[in-house]
Amino acid sequence: MTYPDPYQPGQGQYLPAPVSGHPQQGWGPPAPQLVVAPKSAGAAIVLEIVLGLFGIFGVGNIYAGKVATGIVLMLTFWVTFWINFLLIFIVIGWVTMPLTWLAYLAVGAILAARGVEQYNARILAGYR
Image (cartoon, rainbow, N blue to C red; front, side, top):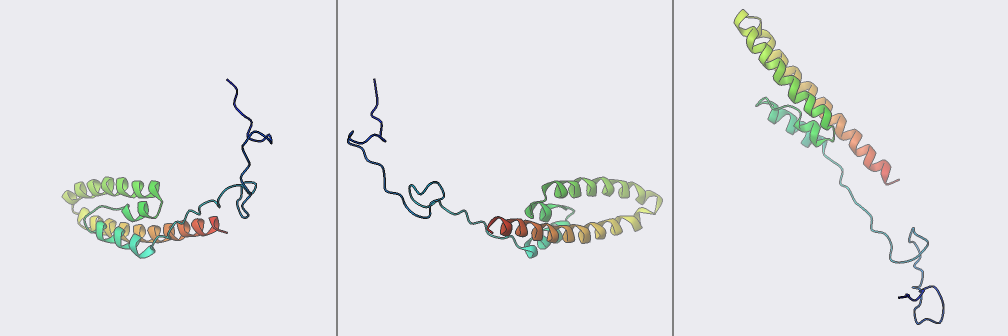
C-alpha cells in the first residue's frame, strides 16, 4: 500500500500556510510559553522557622529548590540532637542542645532565603 506524498502537487493535499512568529520554520500556531512563578523568600523562611520550632529543619530549603541541602539539614539536626541528648547526662547537653537548635534555625532560614534568590535568578535568566 502506498501513501500519497503530501508535498507533491496535484495529489489533492496542500501545505498549510506559514504562520509568522513560530520558532519552527514558520509553520503552525505559535509555541506556548511556559510561565513559572517566582518563589517567595518569606515563605521559605517561615517554613524553615515554624517547622524548625518542632525540630523539622530543611523544608524551607526544599521549597527553595535546594533539596540536597534540605535533606542534609534534616539528617544532621537529628544526629546532633541525639548527641546533645546523650550529653545532657553529663550536663554539657543543657548548653549545646539549645545552641544547636538556634544555629539550625538561623542557618536554615538564611540558606532558604538564598536558595529562593538563586531559584528566582535562574527562572528570570531562562526568560531572557
